[in-house]
Length: 479
Image 1 (cartoon, rainbow, N blue to C red):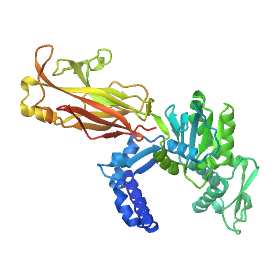
Image 2 (image 1 turned 135 degrees about the vertical axis):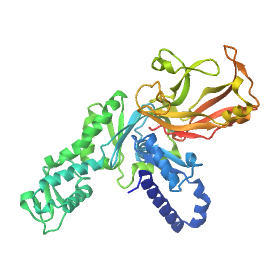
Image 3 (image 1 turned 30 degrees about the vertical axis):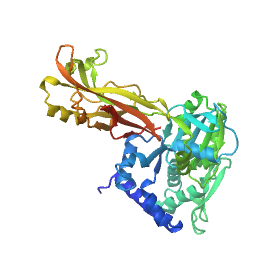
Image 4 (image 1 turned 135 degrees about the horizontal axis):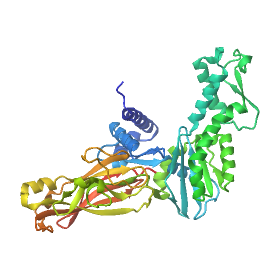
């Protein structure tokens, strides 16, 4: 049909923004004037599952630009991402009564949503003011409420098979009734449960249907919920125990299920972990929490969920680069180098403070004996470095294949940092390499720092003693 994921998101975002504007202008005094004045400074905050990473955030950013929520120029400032777990912790702490959280306590937030269950573990650095730090990369598992619905739908199909009630529309009505009525109240303490889905005329004793209600046994329903609780336990309990977690804050729609709460509470108690509920069925933890997170900024340290670095000409190391010995090139400065090497800037799992900033020195060199002034200016005008992300464990040696065209499996191209250094042409002086040949060398730095909830990178260099910078590129830290 020609429809892309980006297009779907763009249409949805455009619809939301247009209706938000309409509602604001209709319900706020001088709403039209205020909206026109503030529209270009509105910050869009998107809460995403923990398991979403570079690819998904890039799609959402392009969709936001396509929907005219932001522009290419201001997307880095006005579009913010926050994981659902981080949003949930802000929501939980804003809506939880009591003073259970103490300094140095380690606690987790498990957000049981519609399609995913996200979990993140924090250490409380301070309570007044509240300051939190992530202690490890967050987890995400496909184990939300929709999986319970799917299992129950299969159950209905099996129970009414061969009867007049096996029509897909009727089964859909049964599933809808379960989701709104029985799912929020099922606790696994009764032998049988009645689910109202039709009219008094709907009867079939052979499949347990009487006056528009179907009878379901506890044994029928438990497996649907157990499928999800087992996935949650398998996903995060090992990490909870390893990090010596004291509390688990449970939020999200599926957390409203008495059965899910009871099973998880029982499992957590085996390891002396106390479960804390944040009960407000009518509010969405991720949505409200995303707003609170932007305003409050409780979390001051986050875990990087991918390794980021640059694709470089690296000094040849016979231990590391043996398999590409045949690709050695003598650089203009006389050193042996190999192309396509991965130079790590930030490693996966690193806990970064909100004040994190790191600079790495780089340089480019050209043979001065064969370089005209015009060629030097042209070369300086296109200085850049490709940025890559690696989501696997360990650190790979290469980011590109031997031809320098294909990206290696598991490696993702994030962006290219570019800078125009042509103004430096008149300041460069030739240097001599060990063999006596003259070359030009220009020095610059890659600056990596935290901005909001994302890693950002830019090039910096000195021009007549004045610090210059390239445009900023965003590297989602994904945690």
